[in-house]
Length: 135
Image 1 (tube, helix red, strand yellow):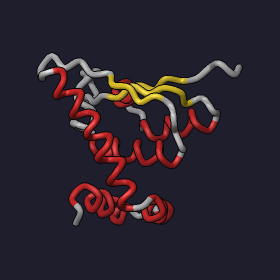
Image 2 (image 1 turned 60 degrees about the vertical axis):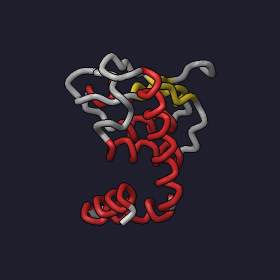
Image 3 (image 1 turned 180 degrees about the horizontal axis):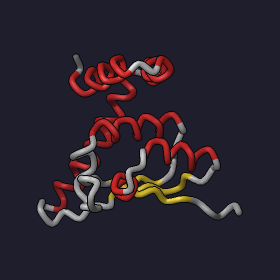
């Protein structure tokens, strides 16, 4: 069916123990990655918190794979900022998106791919640290 696609809710994936990047790649492999809800949580409940506020490493991995998969669908916020001011919360979500995509581009997808292919956990965490700190 050509008009059937999948919606991935980042927070729901976290709460169910999924790897959101992997789920996105699977949907994409079948041409069904169509729509994304972005938020964060502590995994025990879908708190609809500011995107990338808790799971920064998983968020970075997820955005890397969206770029690698040439995802061009919707990136939508699914936050419920009852603890925060609403407009600044939304702005923070978009700033995280913009900044992390820039970090991925700056480090270079080819360099990231090299580290992934080696499968060395020490190199992987060092790469993430470099990406987040610039050191």
